[in-house]
Amino acid sequence: MSVETYYNPILVGISLLLAIFASFVALSLASRIPYLKGESVWYWGIGGAISMGMGIWAMHFVGMLALHLPIPVSYDIPLTIFSAVKAIAASAIALYLVRKGVEKQWVHITATLFMALGIAGMHYMGMAAMNMSPPIQYDPFLFSISIAIAIVASFFALKLSFSAGEEEQRSLFSQSKGYAALFMGVAISGMHYTGMAAANFSPDAYCTTGELGIDSGLLSVLIILGVIFIMLLTLIFLMIDLKLADRDRLLLLSLKKKNEELKVYAEELRVAREEAERANQAKSVFLTNMSHEMRTPMHAILSFSKIGETRVDDVSNEKLVTYFSNINQSGERLLALIDNLLDLSKLEAGRAEFCFAKHDLRESVDDSVKVVSSIIEDKSLTISVEKSSDEQWVMADKDKIAHVLLNLISNAIKFTPEGKEISIYFGRDELPQTGNQSSCSAITISVADEGVGIPEDELESVFHKFIQSSKTTSGGGGTGLGLAICKEIVDGHNGLITAANRAQGGAVFTVVLPQAVIE
Image 1 (spheres, rainbow, N blue to C red):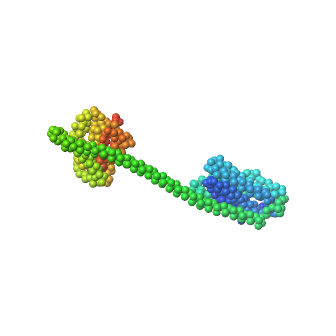
Image 2 (cartoon, helix red, strand yellow; image 1 turned 30 degrees about the vertical axis):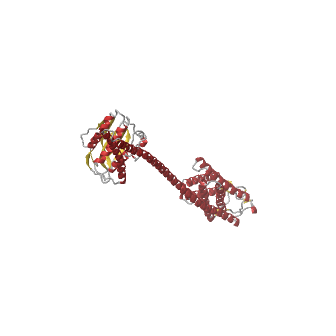
Image 3 (cartoon, helix red, strand yellow; image 1 turned 135 degrees about the vertical axis):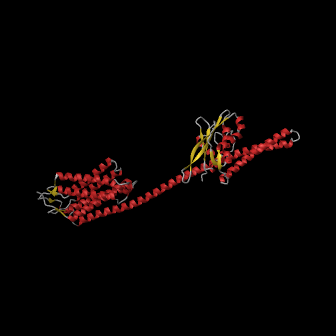
């Protein structure tokens, strides 16, 4: 037979609210600890353990006060203090383990055990502080159930609290943390009152603590209010810390963003500097080539005119004709060079006029081959032009396209060794077009040689003005304007010009021209 007991419903309700509140503080601390660094880890660890442990202990103490016995009851001060210390120590260990990352299974289980055993140990140590004689007897089944409740509650509370995303964990108030605190608070209360239900008091039992213990009067109320005040202070400090941490995080993100922008800017500056250096180098190469190209015919003009002037009475008419012929050829070469510069200038400025008309590319190819036939014979080259019965017509400026083809064929002759072959062939392709149609039919014409080819990384740059392939800058002559002019002309037709290397050696230049004028 045991003593009849009953509970004060108001104090039971307060104990439940305290359990939920204490759980919320505990989980808030547990979710904040992993993100702390430096000395703040120790400050929050010690302060948090005290607040967390005292919060759980306060709930237990109110729950004990809710129990009404038919005998006077007070609590042994050393054992009561020790029960609180036990809760604080268990909280400290749990927070330390959480610092290592609760997502690790062994950390989660170990933290659960310390938190659960701390709660249960604090409860039964507090019960022992009543110093009942004869001692309190516990029902083994209910005792085991209370321990199991403490373990399950701690496990799922930690799991629920840390299942949220990082942003939600950084927030003081979150849905997942609220559910976890409610679950843990109810479970702690369930553990407490299950443990109380497991206690059997003898009918002749009495409290041996006497007047030296803590009674249920004003002192108990002050202790509880003090603990609530500590937990409120903890939450306030947590709110301040989270605000500061959020500010620091935003500042860090802003700094990272600015750093990335600076990196991009630095990379753009590096690229611009390299392009400027390449342009400067190209300009230097261009000036060198231009100087050579202009001085050579100029020297010839001056030399032959000087000879003609000083020896006009000493040489035959045949010699004079030769001198004048050389002067004329050098003048034409100089004029062609100046014309190239002027043509490029007009094309780049958009001042060049294009006279579009339906034109068969086979005619332009035949005319260009005739122009260079003597050079082809001198180098013992073979030129193979695809014979096509179909008209290869395009809407183009005949003279300008003839200029492009003559330039490409002349380059092929220049860089093809003696006795080799140059091939010219046609094809069909599609070009993108604005408007209702997605593409426009086009004709391709390719000029392939058996020369030295072009380095892969220079297949695009050879079309830049003043740029020549590194394989052809020595001994080939030229200013690096020919292909640049070709590209400007083809661009003016809304066509494409590309360069590629042949598998069997040499290079192939392909021009794609639309069969209609693309606006």
